[in-house]
Image 1 (cartoon, one colour):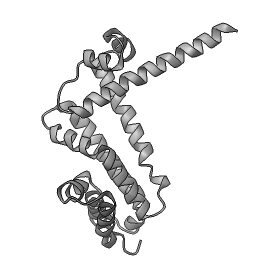
Image 2 (tube, rainbow, N blue to C red; image 1 turned 120 degrees about the vertical axis):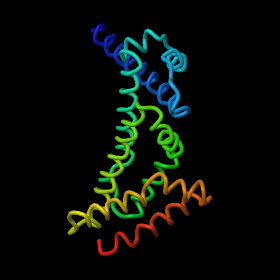
Image 3 (cartoon, rainbow, N blue to C red; image 1 turned 90 degrees about the vertical axis):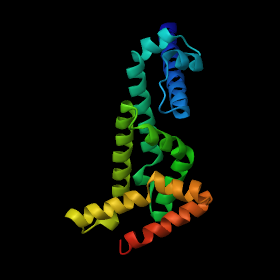
Image 4 (cartoon, helix red, strand yellow; image 1 turned 180 degrees about the vertical axis):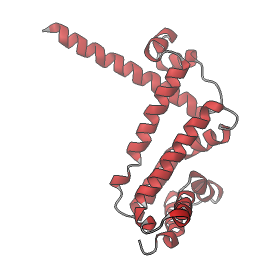
Length: 194
């Protein structure tokens, strides 16, 4: 009877170690998105050996891929279109996300042309954001096809973009709640009749 317990406890420890390693990699990445992160740095932050990182993730590329996938899954859960009932909830969800991650995302976007590995991450983020806007504001797209639909979706994506948040929140100094209101006001003409 002890053996299954030990295997479960061991599996839990292995999973927790993997999460600590991913946490360390993500933390280092957001501090310096365009700079190379060494396995030694990640191992040190996670309190493990480099060999443990390699054994668990197969090296830098595997670690980066696993960390990216985990973070994208977390963002998808935080920005779940099915949990949004109206424009106010959509904008609140969006601004909460940007308050937590916006500055880091801006840093990543600033480096994507210089660091090829970041291009794929940035592109995945753009695809997700477009899909989120399409789902959340589906009513504003109903009845539109072709170029008019594409244009309306592009407008929704732009109003809800991290750069719009930056212009309102960081550059103009609006509070978080004022930023929410400003984004809602920008969306109103695009959502009329939906």
